[in-house]
Image 1: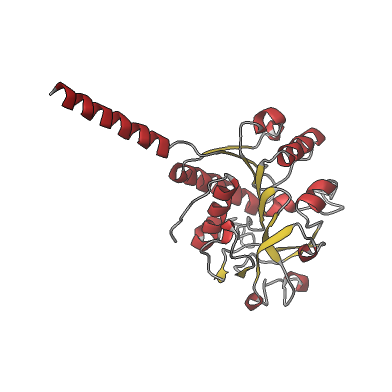
Image 2: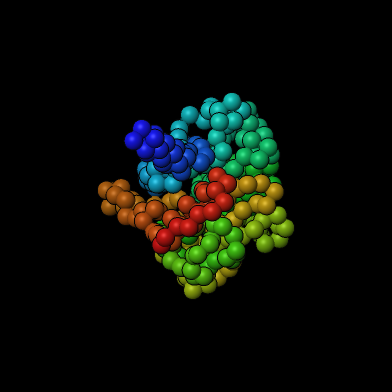
Length: 279
């Protein structure tokens, strides 16, 4: 009887040990944001922080978020496997240098929408060549669609973990879409994952003619093979500016296929080798 009780206790401890191991934290992610000025970007930041926090519980990674960009330093970054830029980029030289060191030493990064924005002259000039030309490869911002509208997106690389199990063509959440000065197809280091499908045209409603796209090639998600990174152009919710209510009219994370791409991207960046996400 004594041996039977001992055996059962050992089984119980083994079970709890296995349970704890299976539910341990796989990696740590930290998101940086500014959350000022454009209400559409602020809306996205609030939504993203909530969504990533929920995903962290379901997929066993830790998620921290901060608007304190001074934490973008060697000491803090050394504790995280993935860094996320939700809306802007760092502007101070020490922060930029710390981020570059982090990436060149094998760190991982995910960026959204405005984090790639650069326009000279503007409040966010192109004054960081490594980030915009080498790391992102896109160069400066060169225009956008308006209003924020959904687009049909085409998978350009179905073999990449980010696009695994994703339909060849699918409808995105509403977004303000950017175009860039550099043609990413000409950069051998860039692996384009998603682009706007031609069935989307005309894309945008204006009122300015240049805010309605009728043709062209527009990448909206890509990775640079020299680094462990993924950029998504999504991140601008539709807002009721015209009637003064500033009400949110769309949700970036209200689209299951888009969410799957973002989550698979994060798990890939966190070096989770096997994941099978349901639709």
